[in-house]
Picture 1 (cartoon, rainbow, N blue to C red):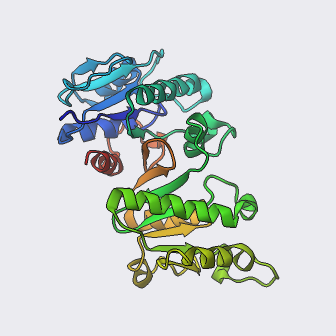
Picture 2 (cartoon, one colour):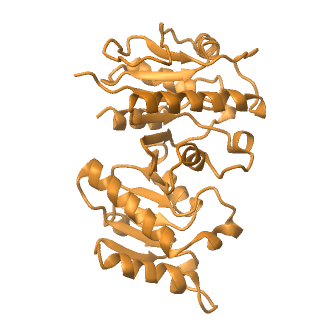
Picture 3 (tube, helix red, strand yellow):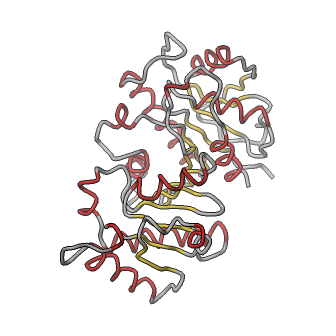
Length: 320
């Protein structure tokens, strides 16, 4: 039986992604063929600079038969771009190239009905320029997906922020009962399909200690009523929990997923607990999209010291 390929977009060209990609390839234990969509010139220059040596298998973007693909070579769909240097600063000069890599990838996946997608990190400030909050929302727009959610997944504990890359002053405006319902439904559907289980979910409050010195707090007005409604169908949902205690050891053992009200409320403790041993999964797209849980990390470019653990976990997750 032919294994479905994993499609990989390199993302920001001036990032550590290719370094960790090369490190993952050295293990060569993946059953699914990997197809990376990137500039061949860039890949070759970084390979030489970082002292890796892989042969390249050039793939046509109209390819439909994957039976002969394996990972003995780098399966590459080339996207032309003139990189004068191997490592440059992150600027908007790369935006057209990054957009083209996503366009080719999404078309390739659609024409072949593929379901496994990884993208390298993107500089949100440079590439998105405020047009969307993040790549989660960028891909939702490109695929015309109505509702998406970010899930930072680890087999022991996952977290999901209700709002993503949003200024803290705007978070309370985006918290609604409907958004909580939809987020829980997306998470339940994912765990049911992938693991055949309904996850145990904890939901945080927004305010310190889930209380406030004013009337009609978000807990009283939105979060508590939403949880009560959800518990009519699923008794494995509890909350709201104060964000300063939900990540203590006795509590996190009771739950599979913690839904927080904003990005850093749940991602900061998640990274403190697991470092890079987690993957960013976008729920609600026509395919499973995973991004390694790290940024471009320009300061580490060319040093060959970056940890490939998150990309390794992403590949293993999709290779099953």
